[in-house]
Amino acid sequence: MEENWNALRRQAFFSAVGGETGLSKSEQYRRFARECLEMAEEATDRRVRALMIHMAQAWVGLAQRHEAPAEQPEQRSGDG
Image (cartoon, rainbow, N blue to C red; front, top):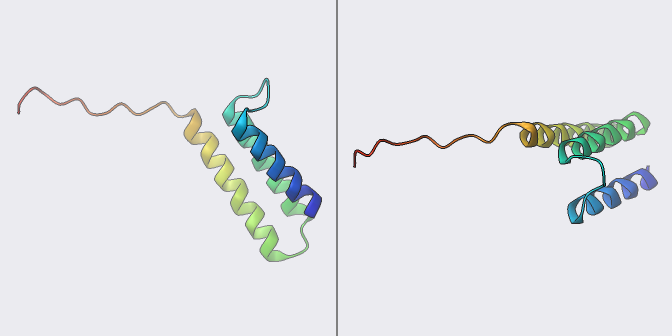
């Protein structure tokens, strides 16, 4: 478990400083989510398993936000 955690931290660091070639940000985030779920499956402690699932949900949320089109600010009329 410790090795997986360290690997995830290294990957997150490298993603933050330059990303991985060939993967979009949302793909990277989804890959991190999958890795969290894999660690959750291997975890024997319920708290660790819950934490890994929570982290996976956070990564998926980031991927979805990154994929969503940027919201356009409401345009105001010239009435002032």
